[in-house]
Image (cartoon, rainbow, N blue to C red; front, top):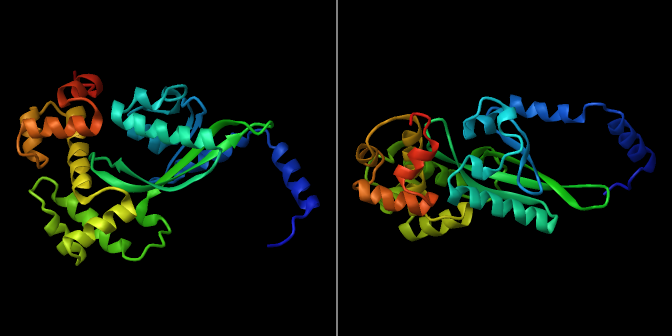
Length: 254
């Protein structure tokens, strides 16, 4: 590693200090259509969010998200997971890299994203904020062998979630045995194949509950659940609330 050059370091620091609007650099993230970027205060309130984040949480522009927390936009179980991970970064003061998250697309279908977060310090060295980015997993520089065949499995689930899917079906897509698929899915994504199937179905159901007035029983049938009771059990396990409560809280249709 090359030795540090004090003159270059001082020149660089002076250059950054002379910039009157350093936050303007963050506006570049608005031009990355699949990348989520946000900055949060140590207490979890949003300080900055790019257009992708605003779209996901359902607001028109950044002014509607600043000062609010994940609990203002996500179901309790989801918001709790986000907040707990943020607190790990704040408490440790260490960067968190390559964390796997399921992030809904415009149809509500959860896609696999890679997340990185860094702590932001004040002059005393205390963590006062954190910044994070999420990007599609297939765009990440994943070193693990075999991850592409698992992405084929992900694609199969997102295209067939309304049908009955067995782990054996997914194993055939990856040319693995069911037990091998189970191990590889946990190793790369941190969840089981069945858990991923559930989250995809629940994600689409959430989208339909928000954007339509379709009967909950019909939503259950179209998203691959056996019946409304099955949807309700799985939905509450994933989000912490029932589909009826979710629609009442998050649907603008009333």
